Image (cartoon, helix red, strand yellow):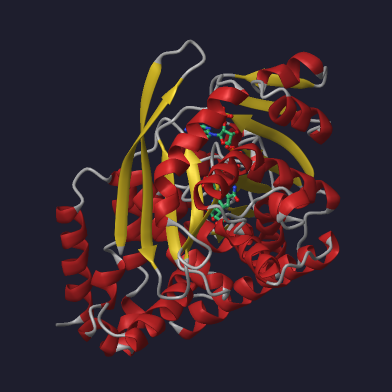
Length: 448
Ligand code: NDP
Ligand code: 2IT
């Protein structure tokens, strides 16, 4: 069978077998559309059924999560853990708590995670999980009871050598603490390496909190450097105002850029003075309030509940909120305003149509599985420190993160070049480089 027929057959089977899972289809389509040149050179991957096997998760767990709210009412959510690929190491990937979570969302995230984790070069497989639980407006007690109930099922599926969850949307240090406490109670083991993103005081790694946002900026910095440019003096917009966005903003500012806009699900703020990061952290992380409060407090800022922050003129855009938040019209607005680079801090934030517009206009485009790999890479560094019962300094850890991001950038370019793309085709480079690492391991491990 020729390669394109093979890819189309796998694609058709994925659509048939996973009906209605639009985001999963989108993630698979994006990867498969890059793999032709790799499969042409490696016919053994076609005969070995590598791509078919990669598109089917090794294991999918879905479970009931019952809990009691502060009024005494019984609530029921659905929890998931998709253990997608263990070719390179224990399943690894975050947990997302958001009302939009469903099987298709968790599978798209788990699928992306396989290639992202492979790109880090760090011996971690791919997985993802979460629940359709909405943490917004919930008390600490409710969050704790939910996390305990979630872990009461999840604990039997995870372990430091089996599957190592971490945070994602709606899951940060507070939730990881509650999840870890319940795991420890159920197993009677202080197994530090079973979760990453732990607080620094009891097994966490320095710089893990910052890692995804910092890493995205490091990746963008590398892309800009290939054209003799940098963040210094540049206007930047960063979507979202959660973990990834906040630390992306921090690093952009440290590199001399001016972040003029950020957002949350209720709208966006423009502050021509540059976003006041301490104020933003106070509002989002301490008060857990809406972003509109920022503009109520800061006279130079205004909040808009309509439209999109991609209309704000900028040199660099860092989408750090959620999937499919940057559409075709946003990409057109960005290119009209002369954007130089877009690096994805979020997972799959740009639609395929948006990517086409950006790449067509010659904009540097860093896809999430390369640009946001710094978070999971630093999780792998956390696992390493846990295994050695050691803790590195912030500086040591950050310099390891910076090196990983540089290496991923170099590998994406070299791979794109080797497989017939332009060196700045980071989509082709990331997909093929990640795929080859996983495919080699799968081929060596037999049909499992
Ligand atoms: P947080 O929960 O800390 O922040 C999420 C941010 O995105 C919030 O500002 C939130 O707004 C906004 N947001 C979430 N859902 C939507 C939506 N449907 N529409 C508009 N805005 C939305 O999550 P993270 O910062 O950790 O994650 C952000 C992205 O980065 C996700 O795509 C995640 O998968 C990805 N990522 C995260 C990593 C990590 O280490 N945490 C690693 C790699 C990727 P609001 O507060 O109003 O809900
Ligand atoms: O999407 C991601 O890479 C994450 N949410 C982080 C995963 C991890 O295991 O640190």
